[in-house]
Image (cartoon, rainbow, N blue to C red; front, side):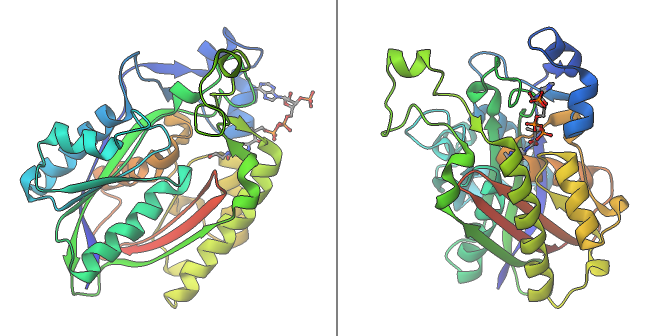
Amino acid sequence: MRGRIVATGSAVPSRILRNADLERMISTSDEWIAERTGIRERRVVPQGMASSDLGTEAARAALNTAGWDALDLDLILVATCTPDMPLPSTACFVQRNLKASRAMAFDVSAACSGFLYGLSVANLYVGSGACRRVLLVGAEAMSTITDWTDRATCILFGDGAGAVLIEPTSDDRGILSTHLHSDGAWWDLVCVPGGGSRMPPSDKMLAERQHFVKMKGNETFKVAVKTLEATAREALLANGMDITDVDLFIPHQANLRILNAVMERLGLDKERAVINMEKYGNTSAASIPLALDEAVRAGRVKPGTRILMAAFGSGLTWASAVVKW
Ligand code: UT7
């Protein structure tokens, strides 16, 4: 037995922050951002809206599509690096909102790779027979950990959520493989240093803006290209597939130049990639399910479609998955 995605859903906040708006906030230009990242606009939550609000909306859309009742759910997983609170988990808030009282719920913490880590966990629970109906959400309010005075990072991130429903299948479709990797030696390439047990909240920590994302952009870029290529190749090899067997490539949406470099190295033509970062920026754990839902709604995903997913992010973490729809 393995897991099969039966429905998708997504949600983004209505407020759009365009590159032109950023030009008024920091020393940057629409041209620089578009050229260096591929991003033109991103969504931003209003004050008081949290990751679970977006995650709940995305989950409801998926449940409606599948015709499932929230009470059918056995397991709720939320991949996020912007939890509503340090505790309880964001998954417990989604469970409460959906009134999915039968489900167990917990978060998966792997930053931008979180959705693929969650897909792996869901697949194992479903494949072992421990769970029959799983909700996996990637939900982020990245704008709440973004330093809006730091032009090197604030241009990149956006808010949103995507959700998938997973049930067991014994046919040749479904989640064919997942490959997960981590290397904590690279923890400081992308991190939020303050606010946790290492550096608890204090006036000094806040004044030094340690509660916001810090990133070594250039180094991250280089590692991202290498790890994405390696984990994509590993996924193809494990499934006896060639790059030409991939119908759709759904990568984590961090930077268009990273993706162009990876696609060139893999020999994958751009028509087969689902890229929507120009509208949403880097939504971390939400980016793959958001792009997947968009591809499903656009009719790009049909029974038998072979999808390669790949992600990298803070940790460092990196991962890939092959799904046959
Ligand atoms: O999911 C999280 C993982 N993170 C990522 O995937 C991010 C990976 N890295 C990147 O996407 C890129 O490194 C960035 C887009 C963040 C930066 O692009 P870059 O080509 O690596 O630029 P850079 O940091 O090397 O900076 C080049 C120049 C610098 O000016 P000088 O020193 O050459 O005069 C920066 O100060 O660009 C300047 N710069 C900007 N200029 C206008 C940096 N940010 C901006 C900006 N607007 N927003």
